[in-house]
Length: 167
Image 1 (cartoon, rainbow, N blue to C red):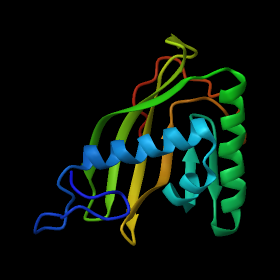
Image 2: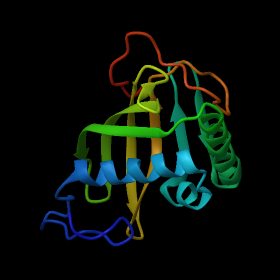
Image 3: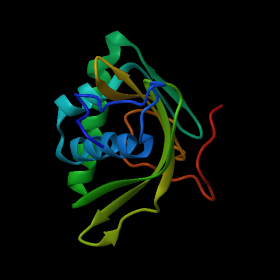
Image 4: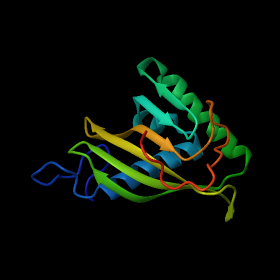
């Protein structure tokens, strides 16, 4: 894929992104880095309010006035990862499809690792990313975890889950 997340790659004549899986992977790579290293600017730029996060047991909605709260919640999780000594926070995209010229839905698995040791079972997530002013950002996230309150200090993977389905 040519270009960057802030400069869109050329799209085919129908306007649909040529490689939605590559775009989706780039966004989750950026957010994984930001989560592990506590980069609030990347979080703010690549998770767009209004933002909805759904777990197996709860739904959290962040409106425009809640953006600072959403970023703070992400940084609480950063502190948890640091406290656990996490060295690698990896999200691997499994599938992605275009839902139009500026919208992609994808599925990925999250792996939390400390020096080659898995700290929790990988869990799937389904996210919607949208492009606005040339920047791709998450607007909806559905995680196969059972946490029912924010901030999420430690995700609890739902037993026997596969990619979560929109409700």
